Amino acid sequence: MPAHPNFRPIADADGVAILRLHRRAILLDGVRAYSPAMVHSWADGMNADYQGRSAECGSLIEVAELHGAVVGFSDVLGDEIQGLFVDPGFSRRGIARRLAERAFARMRAAGHERARVTAALSGVGFYEAVGFRPVRGVRHPTRGGMVVPVLEMVRELEPAAPEPPGGQAGPLTLLALRSAGGAA
Ligand SMILES: CC(C)(COP(=O)(O)OP(=O)(O)OC[C@H]1O[C@@H](n2cnc3c(N)ncnc32)[C@H](O)[C@@H]1OP(=O)(O)O)[C@@H](O)C(=O)NCCC(=O)NCCS
Image (cartoon, rainbow, N blue to C red; front, side, top):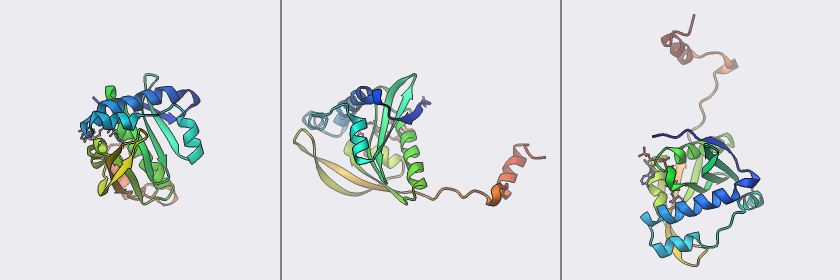
């Protein structure tokens, strides 16, 4: 069933909740594509200072909240998704898709024409579903000292639809209004 989370920028108090869901997503979902040793190496040495790291590199972390609990987050720097995770207890409800679409909208507004991600292999099915295509496989060193295969992917960002000139309704808007019975 689709969820309808609230989205907002990271706040001071979010670090521990983000760390918890991030670890759960890596350990429980990551094993779909990696060995247990690899996911433990991936999750090794994580800490709750998401806001500090994000401020340092200039990325934007957005959280998805359901009933007051943080259940997912995206971390985006320029045209790159640096991280996007959803708690396994809330998977397949469209939360990651909404986080990604919101990131695409911000990228477009900033003038980017394509989005990039270096995807864990456990995330490739999701990234394909939201329009990314593979570019090349690379090897990525984890914090725990192992090297894991990942996939560089890109997605074109179609330009935002232009506003009708002068804010007036264009022919398509009028047609939609008429068929909805909304126009005089
Ligand atoms: C990958 C991840 C972000 C997906 O989050 P989610 O909220 O469950 O994804 P959504 O519900 O928005 O899925 C949107 C679509 O992506 C695709 N998708 C999602 N998870 C998938 C999976 N495990 N395998 C294949 N396709 C998947 C589906 O097409 C899905 O649409 P559907 O449910 O209608 O079939 C989440 O499982 C996660 O955090 N995993 C942790 C490990 C990881 O690899 N993260 C990526 C880091 S680079």
